[in-house]
Length: 306
Image (cartoon, rainbow, N blue to C red; front, side, top):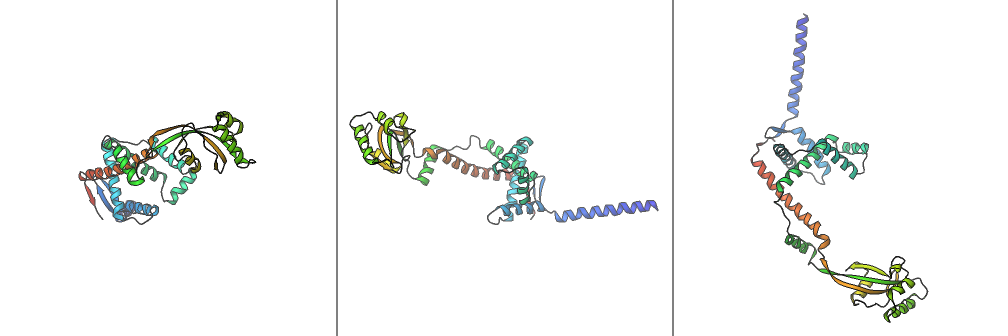
């Protein structure tokens, strides 16, 4: 009787386990097969939920599944090429995400919970991104270049013609607007300077600019557009070595001496060059990545079940 009871217990347990396994199979259907790896329906639904929660508009299920398939393809390719991301690197990347968002450990956990993610989920995403970047960087090395002609073309299309500016070195004497008879005082100093009196000495004696006065009024070099319109306009019509009439700005009256003028070797493109180079590189990289993944798919067994 004892043996029969034990057998019945084992049989019942086996049936319960079988039912449990069968239930799991029903719930966790296969959404896609990528070589020897599967993407389950529950994984897909979880990814769709996360994607739509973060997106501004609803993302189609097929788009999300295709992205998951591409991630599998990339990860498998990384494994074939022994491209790895260490646990230590993942810890550093995770800490960087925390730092960028000014989160402490508790705040980070709370934010992840809001997005229905765990620390491990985020690390998996970071690992996939890093593997992809290393794989693509290695593949693209020497194959993508951004030429100066492409940079110039992009600039012209988005900003207009390239212009070469000029630099000017100036010195000034500032008479604050709140000084008594400020304009008359500025006019007298301007006339003294024009008559041959030492400009540097006049600046040290009369300028209300405490920073430049000890240096004889020397303000250094300026590119076109750096100065306020009133000063820019006056300087443009003044030759090297000459002195302007008093120029009024919100600070007061400026007597300006043009010390040096020279054509700048830098163009209006200068401040945009690296930004444009990076933009073009990213555009080319995105296109390269798409084509490269499509080619990788050709040699991969992919079976979409839904």
